[in-house]
Length: 347
Image 1: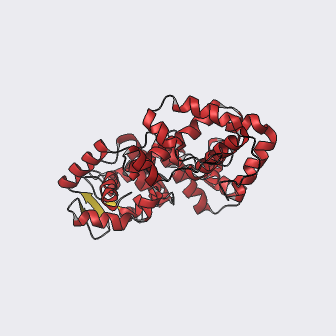
Image 2: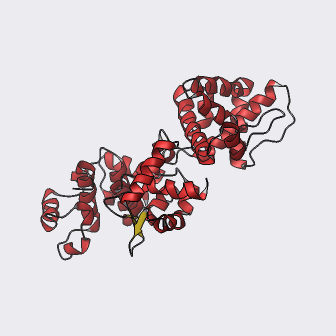
Image 3: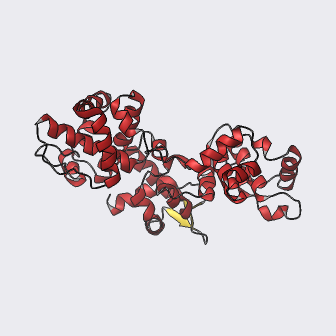
């Protein structure tokens, strides 16, 4: 992505009504999640961008500052940025002209890196097998993925490898013809090397950034398509690829809570610190639609919290106002989460 387009693209993560902290957006884009970044990602309505743009995320502050220099963003003392009226127009123009991810939420559910490596390897193997060639160097050097593929191939053989072509044809026939061609140009096969993103951009008269977005978008959606199809290829894709918004440990905590155990019981049974279980529950409260808030915050404490902050936007609450009330930060945050999920961050 050119520097100019990166500066335009960064604007899509900011708002013209309330400033947003770049640290949170960086953590979301690079999938380096904490309970705090999940909470603010929910407030910013950006949880669907998790893990979607690692390169931009790692350079977010530098690129955001370039947007400040252009008058597209304003920056406050807390490294929070606000979209200016001029910046809003530039952002809207960018969105109207350039590719967008159709299902960005999938990047928080699956590993794009693993999907991409496995699909690329499957295409290579299927191509070489179709020419009867067994002497070639695998396109990936990831030992773990190679072992996964080897075990899968021993179980499903040539028929399994051939399935990648069948699934790609079924998937791509529903996509834009140029997008499909751009996507397939990246793959290597028998006596052919995959095209680079710069070469593909020249081939189809596109911006490199649009090539990257097209490839990422189709790759992650193809992975989901394969899993939903449920064939032998799905058996390769569905294991160890999940990198959801909550950890597997947090999911285990949530399952036990749903079975009726208290936070203290979960901590004792799983030999976890109470603070770890609390973080698990906060993460699940943020992500899952059906969370039993009433089990962890009494109606009396909820009413007390809302009395203290009456007339204030929920995202602007200051926990220090509850000092001496016996209300924990955990309970305070759960009330915030429930209110924001019910009414939005402007409430």
